[in-house]
Image (tube, rainbow, N blue to C red; front, top):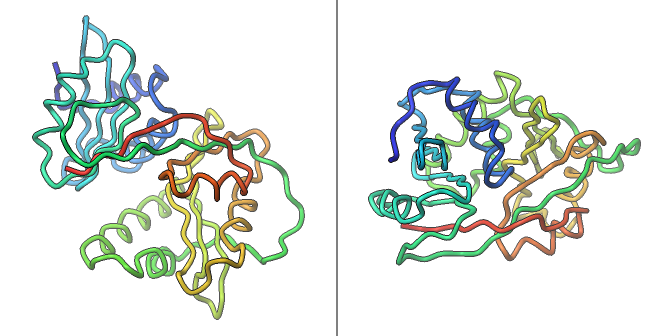
Length: 244
């Protein structure tokens, strides 16, 4: 059975069970802490199998995130997602969906202290500056959504953004959310198309991943795996991206 949850405490309880991909779980946690169960922004669903939670699903606009344990009903999950039209599904379990699917990777690295800052990486507090860069090639509706979401998370001190500036404009940025368990998720890493190939993203990630007590994770598509390996990350697991 899959049902829409209206209880933040229940959802946090399921998240603490630590099944499924830690990177996806931390992503869901970030949105839950930012918006709780505000249905105008995100919807959270729980699958129950054998009288215990077996999967947690978050639907955020046109994206769905799913974590599941070994007892989850994959046929029910596949049927549920089949009704999500024009949606991108991010899941760590293979689903029975006849759509375009990519096998991607979870990357992780343990934070390392760094004293030098050769590229003058700064903490960025202006969400508009961040959105202007990250959304340079996005449609207006997606750009607006990214700005509002990022601004909200930064305003509530959930998301920290690091970047390299040029003439007060962001040239390269990366963000991180770290929870009380010293688990960090990096939602986005982006360098302007005009400044790629200069090592900017690598420098920003080095400054961002500076706490030796935190394990930093990110979700990346297959073509970016080698880049993150060069930045000190290793492949932790696999996830699947479905486009309905």
